[in-house]
Length: 100
Image 1 (tube, rainbow, N blue to C red):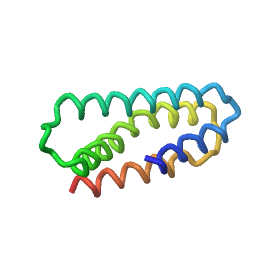
Image 2 (image 1 turned 30 degrees about the horizontal axis):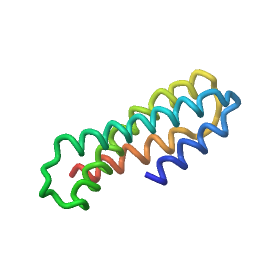
Image 3 (image 1 turned 90 degrees about the vertical axis):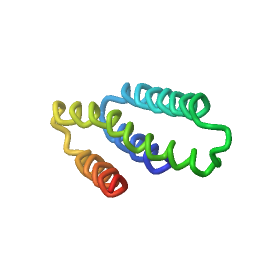
Image 4 (image 1 turned 180 degrees about the vertical axis):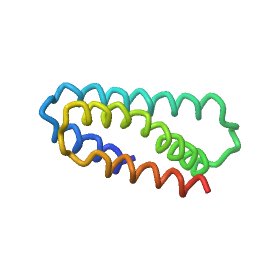
């Protein structure tokens, strides 16, 4: 999660419009809160904490792609050359490999 947060913050600091930083961080905070709620509500009590951690990490990697996608589209519309494609491709292939 630390890597993903650093990627998002780095990407947003490089853009000329800084108004997206609070939006992306609030989306990330809401996502982590929602995942914590889901794990707390639906996980059985006898499930070990490390299994819950793996589930949260897997869901977080998958859902972060949905947060990064609008930032990538915005980057393309602004015609900035910030190499957001590198982050998108990296996260995509990490998810692909981990699902197989």
